[in-house]
Image (cartoon, rainbow, N blue to C red; front, side, top):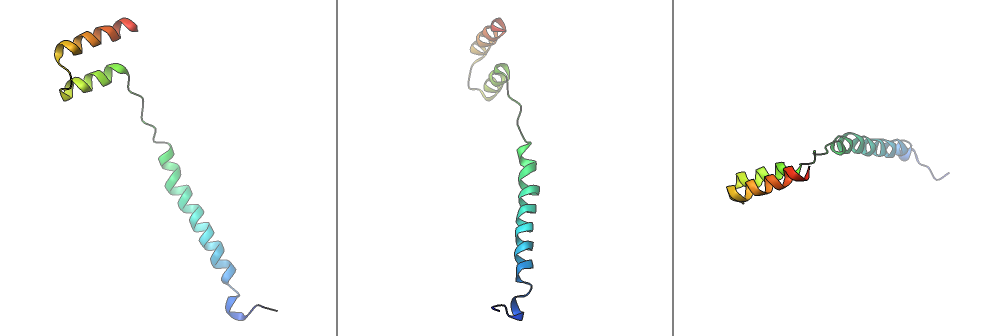
Length: 71
């Protein structure tokens, strides 16, 4: 009644667009979810701070001893 021959395949275009969006979400988003960085323990953080020069050797050794005692 209201349909003209120009719009016969228009519904297929919308299905293709929706399918493409779903495929983009599935293949682009899901791999990034599995990228969970392992947690660093306190000693690793302390070593990095020492390597960057944020703390001196004496402070590093003191804190390392405290961490070893708390384990």
